[in-house]
Amino acid sequence: MSQNDFARLDRFDQAILRVLAGDGRISVTDLARAIGLSKSPTQARLRRLERAGVITGYRALIDPIRLGFDHVSFVEVRLRDTREAALAAFNAAVAKIPEIEQAHLIAGNFDYLLKVRTQDMAAYRRVLAEQISTLPHVAGTSTYVAMQAIKETAPGDAI
Image: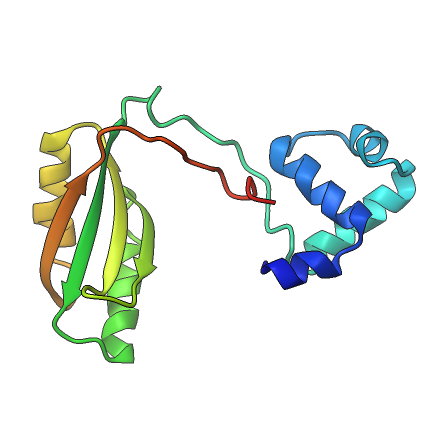
């Protein structure tokens, strides 16, 4: 959702999104109380936001560090071929690698920036050698290892 789309929502819709971004498990009754509407109109607005695709789902946010996945690398990927078919093949293959948390097509000196999360450097090296380097059309990679996360936001936190 762009800033313009967000601005088109009225203050109650915006409030619903802010509250849900902080607590996706809040009851409709508590949500209604938090935004200053009664339950029925709140529920109707919530359904409308879901049908419109503004709210795409609800999920548990899991702390990967508590599960032992505290090694984060950012990988620049350069492709040999950047025609649409090559990009589509690369995109489809990236989607199948669970260690890749984020993948962004970049305008710059490389083609993609990947955020990769693993348990340690050895696991990262395996992912790089056995999976990332073998993706369709990869010409080369450069890795940057994160020493510390200063700011990470969950989807919706910027609302």
